[in-house]
Image 1 (cartoon, rainbow, N blue to C red):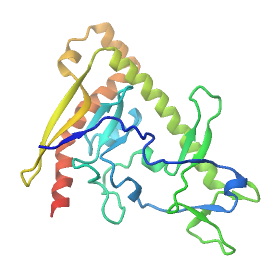
Image 2 (cartoon, rainbow, N blue to C red):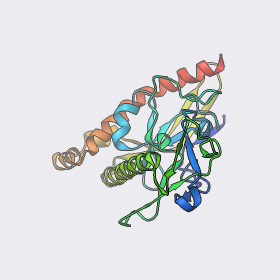
Image 3 (cartoon, one colour):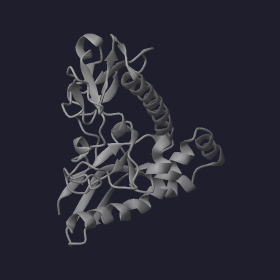
Image 4 (cartoon, rainbow, N blue to C red):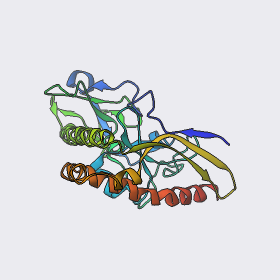
Length: 253
């Protein structure tokens, strides 16, 4: 019975190999292709998720906690290298939620979180980053116009800054949850319709018995910090293992 580990990958940040700082010198003749093709994530069986997204994501994906910071991760696959929510054409299955981590690609903010200003970077992905020729194409948005940031950069920067704020908030919440002793390491056995079984390992869940045993003061602290909402969304997401198995059954047909 093969094991599937859901530990945070060593190559994090996921999907990025060599992001470049966005600049008019480097990207003055570059544009961003308008695309809803998510093929870059087709092999990802876990994807980072922020606490603010959990109410939307819990309906479609099991949400677990992984890595040294116990950050939320949504499970998108069972077999290694197969995201069950992305088809052969790179389309994300509807009506399932597409996480912000995916939607910000190919942009990312780089630098230390203690810096006053992080640097906007872009992955040099030829499917997204295009050279603008003499005749601009309607489906390619320039990064710069007359040496100044164009709308594509302004929008990407705003989205990435919003995402970074969600990262900081999520880390605060998870530090509180982990410090409350609520997380327990677990292993799950998944059996597909064809009878094949997989052990899913390397993740943490909230221990409901420990949650019920919390004192009133500890419970109130979790509620006031938004950690309680994160816990309940996580617990509700455990019902979405059936969604994952449904996607696997569609893939096998």
